[in-house]
Image (cartoon, rainbow, N blue to C red; front, side, top):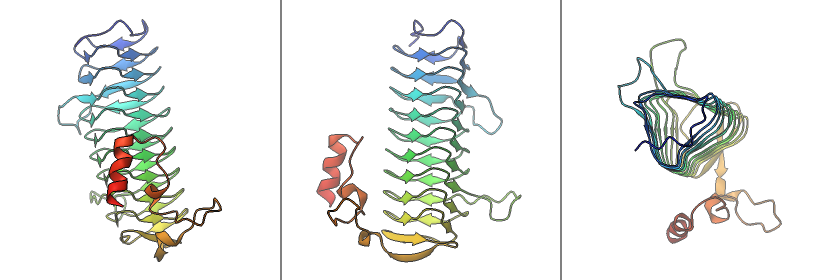
Amino acid sequence: MMGRENIHPTALVDPCAKIADKVKIGPFSIVHANVVLEEGCDIGAYCELGVKTALGDGSPLLVGKNALIRSHSVFYESSCFAEGLTTGHRVTVREKTIAGKNLQIGTLSDIQGDCVIGDYVRFHSNVHIGKGACIGNFVWIFPYVVLTNDPHPPSSVLKGVTVEDFAVIATMTVVLPGVNIGKGALIAAHALLKTDAEPGMLYMGVPAKKICNASQIKLQDGTERPAYPWISHFSRGYPDTVVKDWKKNE
C-alpha cells in the first residue's frame, strides 16, 4: 500500500503514512504519519494532512478512494471520509469528523470537529460547521451559512445542530445551538433560526418563522412545478442508482 511515484519532490510525506496506488501529492504538501490515503486520491499543493491534536483519539486521518483535496487545505487526524471527497481551496477540517461518500466542501469552509456527516452532502464556500453538528444525507448548505453550538458563548456547553436528510439551508443563514432542521425543510436566505424546523416546511426571517409548506414554492422556469422537494426536478451530479431510489420513494 505504498504507491509514491506521483508524489512531488517538494512534498514532505512521513514514511509511516499509508499511501495507496495512484495517489498524487502536490508541491510543498505535508502528510503526517497518522494518515491513510486510499487509491486515486489527488492532494493539491500546500496541503497539510493528519495534523496532530490533543482533541483527537489517536486514530488516523482516513481519506477514501478518489478524493480531490485542493490546495492549501488542512485536515486533522482522527477523521474518516468515505470515497469521493471533494474540496475547494483553503478548507479546514478538525478532528473526529466522520463523513459519508461524495462529500463536497467549498472553498474557505471549515468543519470544527466531532461532526457526523451523511452521504452526498454539499457545502458551498465559506460555510462554518460548528463542533458537534450532525448532518444527514443529501443536504445542501449554501455560502456563508453558520451552524453554531454554544448557547451562551464563551462556555463549555456544546449543543450541536442537527440537519436531517434533503434539507436546504440558504445563503447567510445562522442556525443557533441545538436546533433540529427536519427532513426536506427549507431555511431561506439571511434567516436566523432559533427553533426546530418541521420537516418539509419553509422558514424565513429574523428570527425565522414557519411560513408554509416548501412545496408551495414554484420553480421559476415557466413550468409552475413545485420547487420542493428538490429531488423531483434536480439530479445533476448524482449517480443514476441514487436518482432511481429517489423516484421509487416519491
